[in-house]
Image 1 (tube, rainbow, N blue to C red):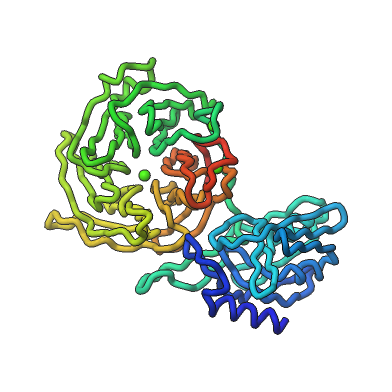
Image 2 (cartoon, rainbow, N blue to C red):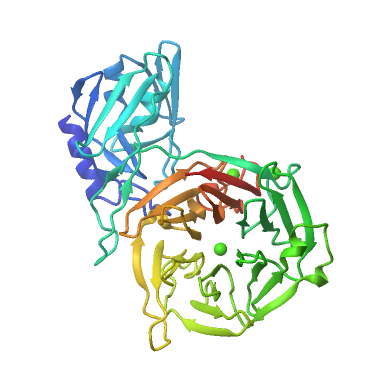
Length: 460
Ligand SMILES: [Ca+2]
Ligand SMILES: [Ca+2]
Ligand SMILES: [Ca+2]
């Protein structure tokens, strides 16, 4: 075990051990303890991407599992009776695959949870005692972990910020299902960005064909209602059921579709009104309680407030991109009942809050949370629990941010879906509708396997 301690120190101390990672993920030496069937087991390892990694010999030794490690192919198989689990070497520290193994200093480390679970053991993490409890499943099913606050790394990810990144390796992720596959005949090649739903329907638009979709919230049956004059992204419904659609670019506009047209037969695109213009980079939309429509300006860094009459006021947030490869700094948006404006910063992985001050000016951006879990933060909405829910597109994840800055994944998966570069989110009661944009980037690269552009559903 001394050797492993040295290994962990080496992992932490030296960037040379690992290749650079696209997400900025860094291994963190663990102070967790473990019991297997009630017996304490010393562990030396690290957490990475919310997973606890230990040398495979530790796990195999506890279970008496047979091991087959092929250094050439980078494939490791553990076998216990009828059950086996295979891990594959990765150099990508941002990999969230539960079956990726990491080789460092000649040591082979594997994710604890998936190893035990695949070999017929239940894994439970107690975040207060920091003990990972492993127990053989008596009924041969995988026993669930208990939901809870998860495991805080205790590390603030940004100077001066008080938020913590919650490691939910051992927390339950919520299940996500597919309401409808918009292009059953294809697995890639269709991009949908915005989504908004009411009790009856879910709306989205194909960015390339400009088709506006109406999807039955119960059956998933879809209808192409019309073809928009220009591409459509973020969407919102006003209190009387009219649909608003952002259309970005330098000549950004907001389209309006009247409520009566949303429930009937398909109609001609000439019935789509231009509600407002002069909203460059328009991306996300949200109504405040006073009826003002707020619009994010994407990479422009602008926020726009649009009156019921379509008059536009422009506010500069002053936000600038932190990652060259991602320039969007105001993307998803939601407004609380006090009028505070929450936006997602896709570039920095941040949630910002703004208020319109008494003098009519926009406040400086306040950081609610900043975390690598929020890289690719796209659509943002307020949940029925008053917390913030965000589609982290390049992580194939839905992330919850509490008002006191706790950041937790509530759902995520690898590139096979059901989350596939999720772009926008819309709650109806406890049901969250999610648009799968399916861009091949981050965890969704390559974007196959998967079903491509689709509407996913998650229930709180
Ligand atoms: Ca498909
Ligand atoms: Ca967006
Ligand atoms: Ca995919």
